[in-house]
Amino acid sequence: MTGAPVGLLIGGDRITSTGHTHEHIFPATGLPNATVAMAGAADVDRAVDAARAAQREWMAQTVDMRRDRLIDLADAVHQHLDELATLNVQDYAVPISFAGTAHMLEGFLRHFAGYADKIAGSSTPVSGSFDVNLVEREPYGVVGVIAPWNGALAVAGSCVAPALAAGNAVIFKPSELAPLAALRFGELCLEAGLPPGLVNILPAGAEGGDALVRHPGIRKVHFTGGGTTARAVIRAAAENLTPVVAELGGKSGNIIFDDADLDRAAMLSAHQGPLMQSGQSCACASRLLVHASVYDTFVEKFLAVLDSAPAGDPFDPLVRFGPVISESALTRILDTVDLAVSAGAGELLTGGKRMGGPLAQGFYIEPTVFADVDNSSPLAQTETFGPVVSISRFTDDDQAVRTANDTRYGLNAFVHTRDLRRAHRVSRALESGSVWINSTSRISPQGPYGGYKQSGFGRTGGWEGLLEFLQTKTIRIGLD
Ligand code: TXE
Image (cartoon, rainbow, N blue to C red):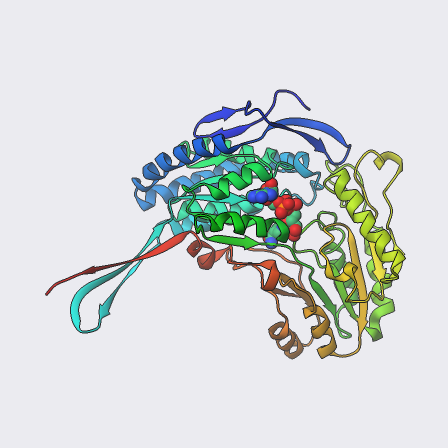
């Protein structure tokens, strides 16, 4: 499916000629499946103008009207769940059995529609006077939302929904590697009756993203992606002192204690590890820490779950394991594996090679597990963003916590135990924005979700996620 080029959505206009296109490659076959126009600085300018006008129109509606529009948008997403799931697969070949981000988008839209008519301020007394002192919450105006390739619809839910509920207009920049589902989301915004220009979809790479961040009309930026890019975004945003929220990568510890239900822990760890979008998720539990007394039993169960997950065509509902995003990602990940093997970072238990046979044209890497990994090794310290996990053993709780915390990241941590006291004690000691006990990372609209340390700052979900898109104003009325 290369067909006519797809392009930007600015206001009500579909723009397919910007002078710069990206050949979208379907990761499961290595073949082009779309030609996508890429936004540049002039397109950002045009989108900001459209967004400013639309935001004034949006704020001219009453809160109940805005609430109802967002409910209409959630309904439109619900009616197109299958189509959005299909586009998700076309974007980055995530197995359709996993492509739950369309449901997540609907859930976040319904959640934040509920806030739209409840954003209240307050009035406070003031010292030494009887003046009226009002505290009001106002939208920023036009905000920029930048999404990674592995979660455009998830970010549309966690960021665009609250931005709209707070009264902002949005310029949404999906990754050049996964623009298709985001573009359809933009169309659904128009079909649901949102003012044209309230949500603009600008697929672009670094150049368009940088122009968006630097634009003086962008009052806040929400960035989701890797740490290296986050530094470039923050440097660019500094030019206009534009505030940034950053949702970044992770290298999450996954602690299996000796009293854990090992069958359940093995299944959850596999699905939170190599089987989670082939390890291409910030939430990937990539460092397993297993109590020495149950190590061999757990590893055997864990490998069995990986082995039972069918790899193949991501459109096949029975497939649980898909390709990585690109040829360059495949090369990067396999280089990481080779480096770990040559450095003796751990024992390669399974995987480590490109899949052949009918999958040879796609970017498939076998689920890869290293055992007895040195936590100071690059394998354990660097986000691989592929189906590669490391396992090491511990003998006491404090050692497990120290090892889990021994990383520059702090997005998620996972704990498997039946001991309630231990679960609470360990959760409080772990340096991460989220701790999941006997669970996978099931992110909910109620949130909040976000990182400690170099996994970012700011939160998505719930009231904290809404506040990221509101400013506070104090109005004092002198009565004397
Ligand atoms: O990120 P990149 P990717 C993280 C994940 C991994 C990364 C993978 O952990 O580290 O995202 O996604 C745009 N100015 N998360 O490879 O390369 C680029 O076009 C402005 C965390 O996409 O950082 C893309 O749209 N924008 C997350 C976006 O930035 C620029 C969940 C991200 O690109 C730019 C999912 C520039 N100079 C993935 N350069 C979480 N924490 O929830 C590139 N971009």
